Image 1 (cartoon, rainbow, N blue to C red):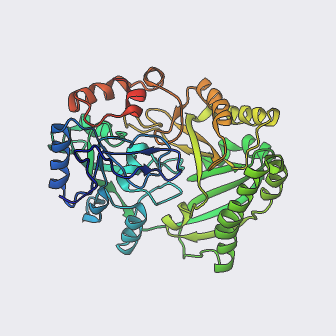
Image 2: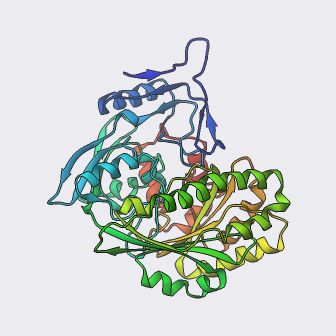
Image 3: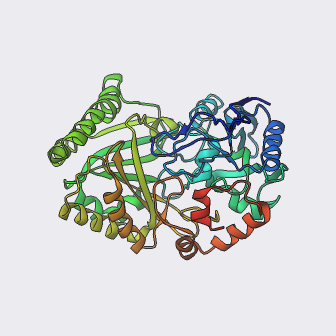
Length: 444
């Protein structure tokens, strides 16, 4: 078995693991990098026999401690790549450690694409789906909602195949399982022939975008916008299918928008704002006017995703879609009346209802509000105030982003919460896959 780091008789530990944002760390007893599903099964059995907990971790893009453990940390990156393409069924099966970027590139070469995706593609497919990663869509939902089958190593080391026809009750939950039901080894996604999207990015006043939100949502397949705190300015993005051909941004334009403004200059601005918070409102007014309108056409992953190199901490809540404008206006009022200084835009996206047990869009049409703070900047006051607003609207926090909710709260906002916890009791009664985060959000 391929391993790195073990706990010896002296009790020495492996090096600490840190997530992407740097706000979560853990020191596992040992780290396992299985080269096969069989090795992964044996790692789970051995851990259970040693009385150790097991957690799998992808690229660490979650902001919660969902993958943290002092037991055995599974790194599935060696389990990567496309395993099968079924063009007749419109599906692709991939190993759990496959990074979304690699999947998108491989699918494009095959003339295929996912229907929808989030705005970054650095995560593993299992990590992204297990925490509910999503983009924005009027009719198309999260990445997990595009799963048509999966394989799961359970607490006893068995490999369980799940789909709508095979172990359907596990399939309903394990598509977004927060690592509580087992270790995912493979996922089968629905795919479709490669298509083109035309993106229209356009600055728009906060009052206008909130007044016209329902219309903008209804008229566009994928609509999202960013509000710049301390201003009345937003930047909107509308993605819709088109006949093509590809007409990507020019090299200079793309570099200015995606690298200089969205990464390089944004990094410098945030660093300055962290050092001199009083300057943030003035910076925000300038920054919110820096991005100009542009229209371009390309294949899906080149439109949906963008490079994100400025590190931050994030909280995101899913609200009933019909309440999101009201909640956002309340958030703006709170920021305007407070002493808070917020250098990161607030992101708003949408999703149709889905049928995944603990999906943030489970059973209801949803809209998301995401708040961010630059890495190293105190975020607790802002996030606490925002969370107070979001929970008043029955908000459901993203499973991989900062929040303070517990099992009692989730039982009230997820009608199928008890269904998930009962399944967990059946699949993992000894909590082999447990940790402090799951204890808080799912109960014990």
